[in-house]
Image 1 (cartoon, rainbow, N blue to C red):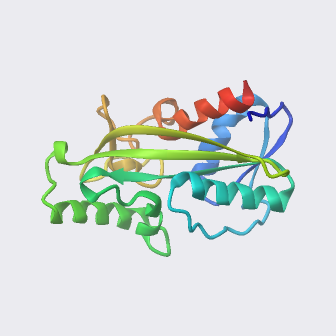
Image 2: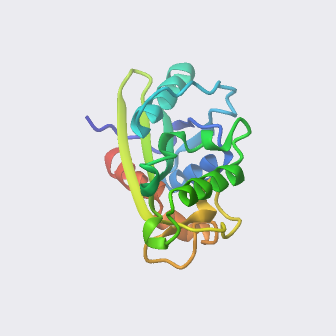
Amino acid sequence: MSRTLVRGTRLVVATHNPGKVVEINALIAPFGLEAISAGALGLPEPDEPGTMFASNARIKSRAAADASKLPALADDSGLCVDALDGAPGIFSARWGGAKKDFNAAMERVHRELDVRGARLPSERSAHFVSALCLSWPDGDDQIFEGRVFGEVVWPPRGTRGFGYDPMFLPDGYEQTFGEMDPVEKDRISHRARAFEKFVKGCLG
């Protein structure tokens, strides 16, 4: 059942990833929500044993809502490369190691593709997935998912964005997410597409 967040509601952004905090805050700002990050509240990062983006998003938002007694919004997202059977997928952050070094993660994607002989653009198709979960303190959860399709490029291009953005070229564009103006990226990204559904479901 759809529920509405009204202007002035305090909403926990259930992530410790600074890049995600910036992007989500930019998306919700026009709706008059008072956003605070899980990191700013000193909430711990829960383990994410889920096997799908949606289940991991729910784990994070549910933990934040239970701890803060406020509505909480979490994103779980990642890069899925077709020639790697969908990897890194839900393990996208873990491919960067303990330090979440996405330069190392991008190098690993390139190396794995090279091992499989996937060197042509047509062999490097990929998509980003974003699953948003809004959890309410009373136990209700709502899921919204978005995707954007494209290909991975090498070497990475651009210093904007975060994560795998510099190696992801969306279909129909000449700039990677790492080169793209943030306003343009926010218009077409997987997170933006999930957010459109969130707006219709909870802010409309």
